[in-house]
Amino acid sequence: MAARAVIRFAALLVAAMIIGAVPALAQTNDPTLTQTEIDCLNRGATAADCIKRDTKDGSGERPGAGPAATNAVLLPALIVDLFPNPIGGGQAPLPTPDPRRDPASGALPPPVPPAGATAIQAAAAGGPIVSPSDLVAAEPPRAIVGDVVPDEVLVTVEGDAVQQIAASFGLEVRSQRQSQLLGATLVRFGIPDGRPVGVVLAQLSADGRTLRREPNHIYSLQQAATIVNYAFERIALDAKGASGENVRIAVVDTAIDDTNPALSGVIADQFDAMPDVPIEARDHGTSIDGLIAGVGALKGMAPGARIYHARAFEGGKSTMDGILAALDWAAEQDVRIINMSFVGPKNDLLGVACRNARALGIVLVAAAGNNGPKAPYGYPAAFDGVIAVTATDAKDGLMQQSNRGAYVFLSAPGVEMVAPSGAGSDVVTGTSFAAAIVTGAIANLLHAAPDRSADWVEKALAATARDLGPKGRDNDFGYGLLDIRAAEAAKE
Image 1 (tube, helix red, strand yellow):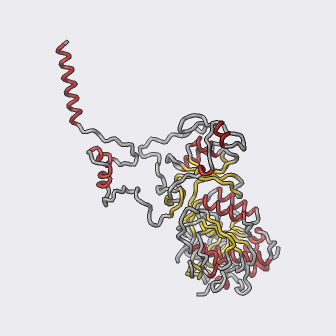
Image 2 (cartoon, rainbow, N blue to C red):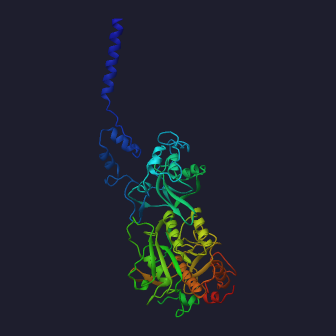
Image 3 (cartoon, one colour):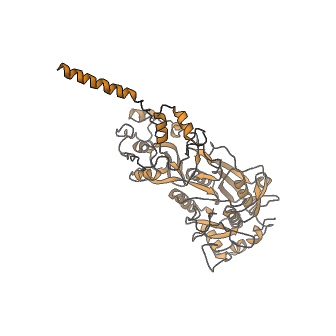
């Protein structure tokens, strides 16, 4: 027995000596570390030294972890990586939340307080006390890249179930507001745990408290390459008699330089859909407003028109959430026309907003897009009830970069035109500017006969356009080149 005890003790002593000779492995909970960095940590170096040695330039920034590209657009609540935490590649799939239970505690959600309940009553019912300031998370600006905001979804909700939905699906309420054009509460939910947007949308689709669910898509202004304006001549509009006096027009675009002489007395009101984002770009919006209703040396298509300008773009980019806020504001101003010189992917919420704006009698004009002949359809231009405008040059040739497709409705000058820009002027090209020409021309029609409906305007433009390209409507020029003189003469 004593001999066996001595042998056991000796074995334990040897094992302890072997373990003591092996260095302790570094422990880390950082999921972003590469295997090389973990091995480096295991050699006893600090994380900072490892990361510095593991980068090519010694800057301490791993690939993909550095600052956004200099051309990135800074907007609130956006992140750099398009897919920050993909499923696959050896990772265990993320758990699917049970819609009936709080994802943090596993408990069923608290009972919903009755409508009109105070914050104190809500707390008594088991729910949190939520102040209006709590509804929007304070987050630093992040950069837009890709086609969607990768950690957000947009959802329309009826009633007061917003906080309960967030708790059930492990989401953050980043903003919410009542949308006139959508007829419901529009909620911007954040996805804090890295689930892909498509997964979250699929999870939400089974919840009857949600009405519509869409990604927060990214949209881009449609300016191509950076002289007397030839547009009046090409569309048969008398420059001396052109007038959009008292016609109310909304423009959703960048900020504007209202010190430009061409915009003197033109802007009736302004709205900022991204007040927390510093203004850097003003040229595009200034050009659009000037082409529509400019005065003085750079006279627009419809001088006298009243422009209601909504800033929803910075650096040429915006989100669906910002665009919807701008469109709601525009509808509240009782405008007759909305100019949308931007393009993005199809989004059901934008489609509903456009359809309801058209039902209010608003004429919708949009750029067809500058992404080339093989590009997918551009929205909102491709929605029914939206006049999709492509760009032509001084000889009525199609702009090479123009989108093509059955949705193209009308052609208008948009290549190398002089337009207000900044505090002066510039030569501009793009379907953005062709859309502005059509918006100004329509303002002339409505000035001459204010009782003309949006349906009448659309039919008259189609029936009187000067055919270009193949006979009849085609995928390049639509119905053809805008002819405002013929449209004015059109009968009901």
